[in-house]
Image (cartoon, rainbow, N blue to C red; front, top):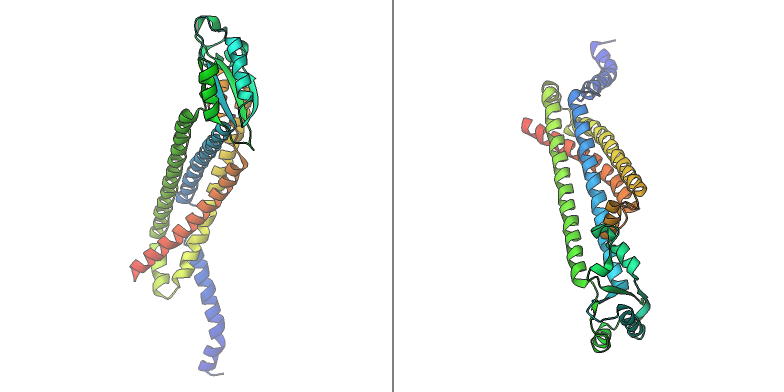
Length: 321
């Protein structure tokens, strides 16, 4: 057999062996476990945890604002101010009669002295003596969902037949609270974007560090014809695993935090602090949308980590040309 025949016979095997050797060498560009890799995974876990807490706070604030808006549509209040010689019980009965005759009012309820004291207890403390304070009597009106509420007619009737009684639909106060809640939501979203940006920068620095520590191997493989896409795939797969591990760890820690916070506050129901929080913000309850957002966030961070790593590798390889 001639030398050329031997060469032709050995060629495919030699080429296959060369490609296998190249794959093994490229596969070692990003070691399976390095100090920098573990550090990046911890950074991603921390960023995911903080971002998940931000999402939970945004979801809680958004749902609370929506509850406030629904409450103002369903309910309004008539206040009867105390005055010398004014019988609050008789005035409350008169207000009830006027309210029941108003279009759009489905239910009328007058708060007793003890009920008013319980409403004020989170702010003024227990053992309140209402006789010593100019506390107005409250008449709560539940509004109908089918019939529009005729507020103008009720206001005129109160001015004419119930002196000292005023209609308060809480609109001005509620508008301020809703505006504040929406500002908190936007602030949380900005913080979330900043955390994602910090994660991207961390991945960029980690990818550049991995390429710098294996610069000689990358340069040789690049110059002998290894495709940029193949080299980038090695980094992309490695950083995708790091992103998933860190994201899952941070997301799981955030979900555990949500459960612990909810359980702690539910056990403290009845205390003055929790009652005041419930009165202002409603019950602490993270909705299913927040948990779904955490899962989506973990996937987004993992994908963002992989894409950022791949883009960084391509940019670095182009600088070698």
